[in-house]
Image (cartoon, rainbow over all chains, first blue to last red; front, side, top):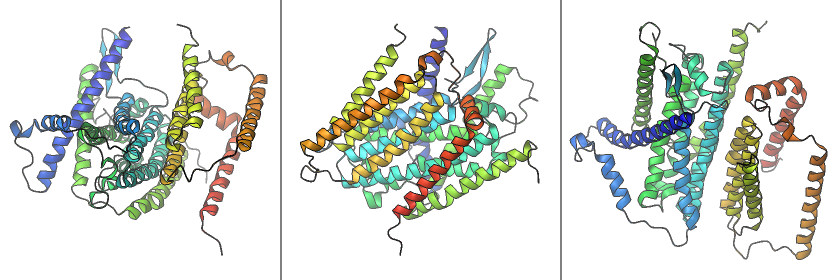
Length: 344
Length: 165
């Protein structure tokens, strides 16, 4: 009973934090865009415009809801639901902190540590594609369909390269559990140093999976009006846009925990703090890393223009995947060498 | 609670969604029901403690192959006039053929060991155990399958090429 209660509280916290951070990412995006373009950005709602996400949310809810008369009603509604659901599901396997010891019992700050951890993430991400495809098809609009087709082919192409980057990581860590991966990176033994190529591949693919610039072709407004969400209005549109920000938060968390040590930080053993204190500091540092990567996503968005569609496919299939295979090969040799099994 | 209740719920859903795949009017709906069917079958894997199989099943079938199916179907403009009409003879023949397949499947599973006997071993489907079995006991068949897959890929590329002069 106590177990269930703790897990329930954790689920609610992770859910609320994901939504909160995603909401404030929209604010951060506007402020960062403004900063990079030498503007002021939103500053009307509340001090420094801090209430802007709230105002946006209210506006979204108040808009008229239009379902096109020739649309497939059920699927039209299902699309944004799938998108939002899959975006919120991935946070389950991420270890948000080492854990707290209260009255002799250890409570890990993670909802569940399943032995297929990272595969679970991939499973959920691969289901996320359906949100876009179903929505785009059900809209009964050429532009929506084209956007959906683009989005899904882009996502399945880059999922492959992402999987290959992670296979190399699994080879060095020898586990699929995200928690064990993070524990192995104690101190400064971060995976980024053993997998430099893997990090680059993973981050590029994360950009493509989140449909962020320079890979935001699905909603390329110069060619496709609004892409897969052309026909959507009101909060259904809001769900699509919001899911993108949740995905960005979760991808940042996954990048940080797989390659950048998660809640570990250098000189963790020299601080002389109690384990509980260290765990709290670790969680704060983990969120610091996540915020850095969210900033990185936005920084790229306002720096690099989008690719042309053939360039995108070319990069995915002819550069990323061969590099991924090369990385697996190199990692295999490295692992053999490290275990002393390599004989010339 | 009856311990086999989850099984019966899942089984009902699987059969329902499998039927809907055949009975749906729109091909896209059929594909979506098929994806749902894969999820329920994945649920059966979970009940048998095969988490890895579950994850791979979802990633490969629901996440990749069905996306391609959906992809193709979205391009096809299915009108009533263009829909291929099957004669009753063909429908009857298909039913008989499918029935024969069912008979063979039932016959195969009848002689097999009961899975329920092993289900009290909770670690049998974990990644580590499965990996040890695949790379130890079943190394040769496992590697042979990879050659089969490679051959299929090369074949697909060859077919995909327009025409070889």
